[in-house]
Image (cartoon, rainbow, N blue to C red; front, side):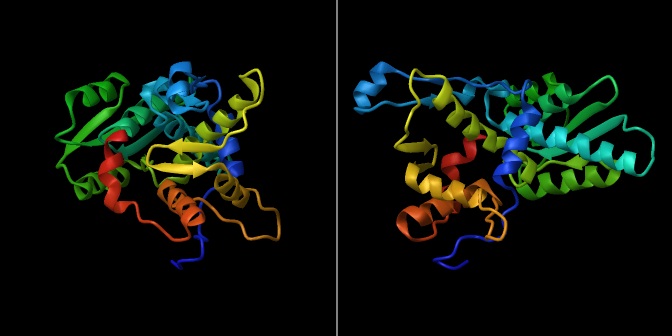
Length: 268
């Protein structure tokens, strides 16, 4: 990747995020934006907190899991209709995760189930997963498959289940449908700043765990999603690359987050 050129093979657009927002509306919580006068005084400025800890399963991960599950339902149903085959009656989704995505997909499958279609989830989890996380996944009705505590073991077992059952694999972070779903939290946040306060809020900066966005730089990032026909359209491949691109816009060089994985691995 060139030092001065952004990635050119992104996989979602702003429109995908908007569609995801419509798809999960009414199921995912519209989490509040809260303020604190005490914290404002300490910071010397007005701060606005998007409290995604109040989301179902306690994490924004539910948004992505729900969007991916519902979109997969739509895709399978459409394929059946086009092929004049029997109406879809069951859908099995599979992932590997030891934390928030595991719980998110388990609940997404449960809530996506209808009278016509039963959705089930199988979660591949490492053997050292804490009981509290395992119990949460089981409580949502998912099937848990335990494997050695390595990324290779988790992926191989998930692939095996897909091959044997025809299930749909939903990656915790690299699935475009998941990425689009996670992005809805930002759309929601910006909408709430316009509608939920006495006066529209004009942000100076957006702070996300692991990254600081100057708003002017953020506008440049968002502009790439909205470029019209005939212009180069940058697409999102992974959230990490969005952060890296933001770093590039702010400081003029690419930045690798791999060596800082320990900072974020326990956040989901």
